[in-house]
Image 1 (tube, rainbow over the protein chains, first blue to last red):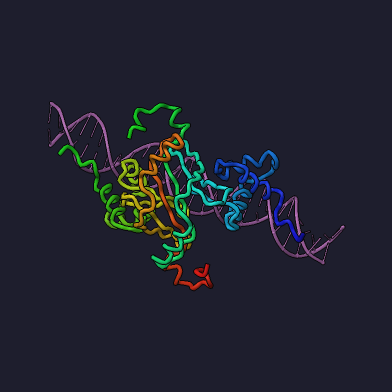
Image 2 (spheres, rainbow over the protein chains, first blue to last red):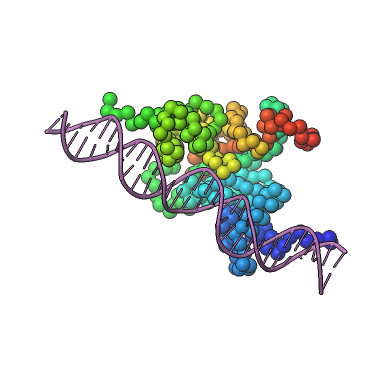
Length: 138
Length: 138
DNA sequence: ATAAAAATAAGAATCATTCCTGCCTGTCGT
DNA sequence: ACGACAGGCAGGAATGATTCTTATTTTTAT
């Protein structure tokens, strides 16, 4: 084979992101890979994440509490974000097919390439942790 | 009447956000209100935006190029974000009804309160500004 | 093995946002 | 009108995530 194109650290960073469903922050990835490579630098994490994004190997989900969240699962799916604890959860339900992109592109004469659907609310854990009056009553 | 509850500057900030469809940043609002109130402080803009958000008078759309974007139109609607110039555009199409929140809440035993649907791509302006090979061919 | 190219560590720099402090304004009771 | 008070504000410092810079180390090709 011609070349690896992946340094050890880069590979470890990608695998760390792929190995979890927590939709990690850069800091999380840094802490996750650090034990294996104690001289890892946070800059390296950011730099490689940027590359992975460009190459389409990972997706950026959005900013939660000031920190960008990433997802190693690039299959189309939607997300739920807990407004209380900031956890991000995958939702398997398919609500919109990719065909919409083409339809919108034509209707507005522009180029629609992707979409993201994010639900907000309070996750199961937060809901039961501190019983709140009649939140669910509504 | 008891009290205004709205200082002049606060009112001006809210009106600035409501008066436009550009989905402004805090800085944009600051620049927009400054001419009328030259001693306006950026901190005041941020403080009032935070209050408006809490009170539900405006919505935060998300972070584009590192800056949060706000929307004075709180009626449910979706958005398109140009990956090239960062402009945000309203889409009137209704793809998901609010009923989904209840369905998801029950299915996952959590509290789903809202959702946001954002399309990404290249806006009309950017598309024609610099003719790009066969982007639309796909 | 060696030289060129790519990747990295470390820390400085950037930049949006938040926090802090003292000042100012309008309000209310007297 | 007067004094006391609460809320709102300017200005600047502080914060914190992300990006940039530079010298060094690792990888790759020869």
